[in-house]
Image (cartoon, rainbow, N blue to C red; front, side, top):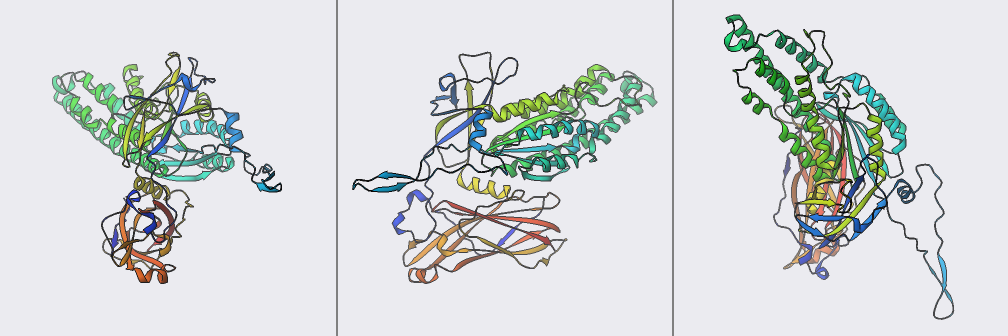
Length: 580
């Protein structure tokens, strides 16, 4: 992790709640954003018939919605199709804008005329953000290139005015090859640039092939009933399987960590978020097929301790929970296609037993199925029909139902369980996100800060300015980077306290370096305090907060978000610096 500790000189405890404030006493600050006691939650629902085709023509009364075990009234309902979304989204980039409605002249009570703006009911379309996540660490190059060729053909068909696509390549850490864009050519070029990438899966296949060769040579019960030489060979092979499993487990930890990092980055985006994960599968239990094979050959040796030791299903459970918390839907593609097992090796004595080949495939497909099912997406496993999978994704992007209900807000981070049914049509498949995460305002601001580490931000109503000073060397190849955050005093809500006025600003800071190492979000609170008599004179001045970031060497992007707890206004700013 890149180090980003804030060393802050001015701190104050406490916060203000907008609901307890007499607004007439507030000096300065931007307009209040009211605490919404009841909010509308919309759930995207995809309905398929027995042949997997989208079902259209359903109405509000066809659906039943249950939250936390209690049936809820559906207060909002919309049915979307590609035509509907196209009209709502408007023309694509470069298209001629439609003529705007002109103001209309209407009669007034005095017999004259007055001008009123024309009213046109235009429902804004929800933006769609797609991440094409090419997991090179877990991909064989020939499988990747075959699948990416089909994805490139898919791109132009989904690049609508409201759709943005980002390309990420993962090898140990995640690298953004193409930031979010609406340019299909830029996406296609980014995918072409990956054709020569190389990850660990090729080396893993080679090591696995050597172990399989020696397993095929090992006599039955060599570990306990064979000669001294065969017993030694069995013990040595068991150790190699253990080391191989540990290496896979380390690689898997890096792979899931990189995925989780990208999910966190998407948290601050408002709209539908889809992550298309391309891999040759991810092992739920690293080396499971080899461990079971060894146990079957040596029937007196228990393999349960090793299986328990390498079980990594919890990583994918956590990943699915993180995706649901950030509102991201997984579409997982197993690029292996038909056959399932790793490519046959010339080192094998004979073909791999179908039992262990099947176990290898299932072990690598299980996490892909889990991520898709838990997040309301789809998984393509054991099939060469990548085009069919992409067609299903296109259907899901542009043909779906949105059902909404009112949710009394708690003001805190809360997870709600969701169930959607179509009682009159049990033959239909209903796909949706099974959990709803209600986020506090502070969590929403933190999410946006993290998103700003990889995506451009343009949301600065408070007029923040961020400056960096000159780095200073510290011990162990770390440097202090002085940061100066300033904002207009008049943009902060100030409350009277005896003969003073006091304002508080909560500041969130995070950074990411060019190697993909990212800090946690740090939270601090600053206090602005002055005599009441000085406020009129000083309200046009800027308040300055200074702090230091402790960073490793490299290119860094620093993002700062602020929150005024009284008005509930947030603002964001960023900068990039080379350290040292």
